[in-house]
Image (cartoon, rainbow, N blue to C red):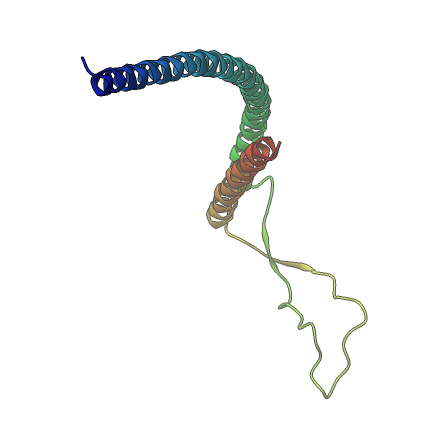
Length: 171
């Protein structure tokens, strides 16, 4: 073998040795980086799961508290609704029986502003006894009023629930 061939073989062996060292260093670094990254990833997942469990427990407590409040309000509203229904059922019966009466106003409604040629009365006139409304019509008027009052109460319940939910979401 000539000197040139030995020199080329040594160069080739040196390049191969440097390449092997380079690959070994890369493999060692990647493995070490990967192990550190996996440990950090696992720790982050564990912390996230723990936070999720705490948040879920807090949300569950808030939900059960809100459900208890709403159940209490519903029971109170149901009791009031039953009381109103009994009173409103009795009112048309009393009117039909003649115990109570509804009357028409004795005079037309007074205007709030006076015409230019006369002054406004200082005191509103007292509504005197006008003619009685026919009992059947009075009972229908009371029934219609009861239906409207029921709608208003149900609307108020919806608004109260909405406000309660909005207050929970604002926390």
